[in-house]
Length: 312
Picture 1: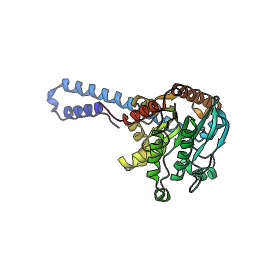
Picture 2: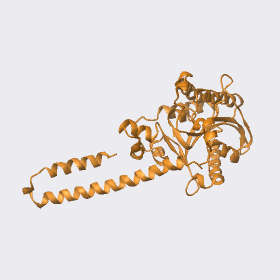
Picture 3: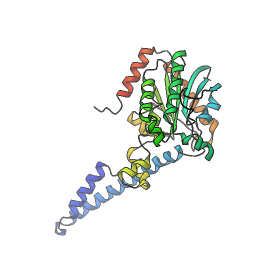
């Protein structure tokens, strides 16, 4: 999408082009200079589009590690907890307890599927309200027993179906966020793949929010944005370049607090190394938070998220 500088250049070029040719070579020289500047801006924009779209593709890579791949490699004594104690057990959200570097933690994370059957069972990582109710159940356990909370975010968004809306999707997301704000224990979230819309933020209102190097985090998918703005989902690459969901831009905007490195080529190339790097980042973040009093954690967390999107 053209920026302000490019629009100004095009406007000036258009005005010059409308001048009579009698104005001479001075006008022609200025037009040529403007054209060169436009070509340079377009080349830079195309490069940025390609770099951002590469992050989108890597975040969605089918061989990328999912929550349970990391759980297997970074946690000891893992016990998965099922069900929301009311309606159902949502497979899109994994919850449980385990030991991270000797420290007992509670973990919640979205889980996509590897094959068609698992993807259907887990709704492609898109949770129903029952999933967020299950997550809140584990948040309550963490608060009660003083376990730090770790969230692994990887979803295109909350499940968009009619049944999910009938079960109170919006309210469930809001309650999950409110519960995280009130936690008395340290919390760290990491976007490990797609961080999409309310489905992501529902489990990411944390003291520290991290992103893996090739993850994305946004309020809408590039395809959804393109369909709204240009009535064409095929313009997804242009949309992604416009709202910049990649880790570097999210860090620049203050949406996340840090970037977790990945193996060369992306996390899908080496699950073990990706897990080692993620574990180190989680341990470091929790170490920075563990000595803070509960009241200070809550105050900082509230101030952090109320400050997002505020520009002076």
